Length: 518
Image (cartoon, rainbow, N blue to C red; front, side):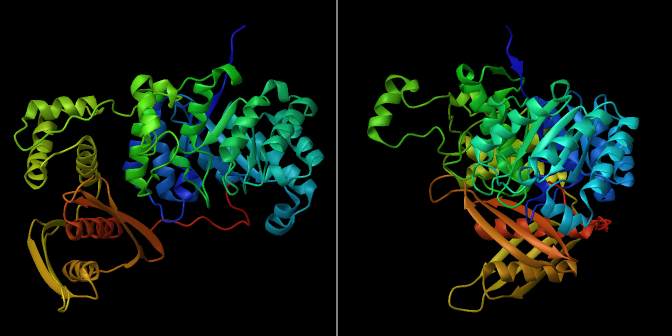
């Protein structure tokens, strides 16, 4: 008898973007969506189409251009949201509308301020409306794990009858415990009429650190769709880490006895891409994709791994797409050697692209004795960042004078018309001085609300990456930069954020209706 298939819904572009301080451009969302298609997730929740014109356009573009996965949009249980979701996803070869509505008493009474009967009617009416547009409709009772079970079962039965094809049990606040969550899934399968005719999905948050455990317990209990985000990003403490669930099911096929359609070799590239675009670093000891996930420091462990990797590794790094070897390049390396290593790391470049990257590589090699795989990844991240961002201003030169004197920074930028612009400013430190000098050149300023520095390679000549978040007009803009000089990296990062807020359109805000997405 063939194993049943577990489907994966990736919500990095929707719930993941709700992480505090994250804001992605349409191009960045498209880049992630294309990578998710290479990962072969089953469903991409491309966004929340009714939330803003920008999100509507991003969902529409992904629906038009990304082939393979089902493309879904989230929608509240209100008519305009359903209509907007369909208008965006209808361009997909496989569209889905995902309707959500609060179901717990605490949400119904304090957020919706309605009674149970009114909420039930809303759920049925909006699922029916979505079904009139689209054959594939998912319904999520928000805060399901704190909902009265009998009421939850009645609501699920009603929406299944109205046409829902997937019912998603949302542990919205990370309240569930694996044993109880598994029992809830079993009870739904046993007690909800029509549950055997639809896909049971789960969407778990990580407030108690149990999102992955709850998701796996649900699969054991019969759930056949799992929702999550790459790197576990998302609201508050985040969502279930999709890569951890995927590899648990892949590694422990003997226990779960289910099949998956994911290309696991695309996990590491997906993780790196999401980390780069969101500016959210992956902790070194993160399961599956962390820097230390396949490193062995203990002498006993090293001895065992050298004799047989299975002594201390339950999965091979190659299985998740971690580069298998680390070829060190230097300033004497040629174009062919660079191209071969980039291709081994998964980058497919045209001849012109190789020539452009080679110039940046030689500049880096002049500063570093050895250029490692991680250096190349950062180099490619920088190339993609620069190519994908609005470039009103570009950085030509940074000079800083500090020590015991007054910190002073001078910057020289290329302006929107190709003109050279420069100015200088003092500050209470090097980064403050650089940011103020840039503000003077561009004639605008934002409030720096977060500044993060990370050394991503080893040694005194390490490349450092800087991620900043800048507030402007109530919106947060993320900027990133990398260099062997941390002041230069800071200037690049701040200018990146400045370019974003200068280019940003005023996005329409989502009208409040007393609820937020799960």
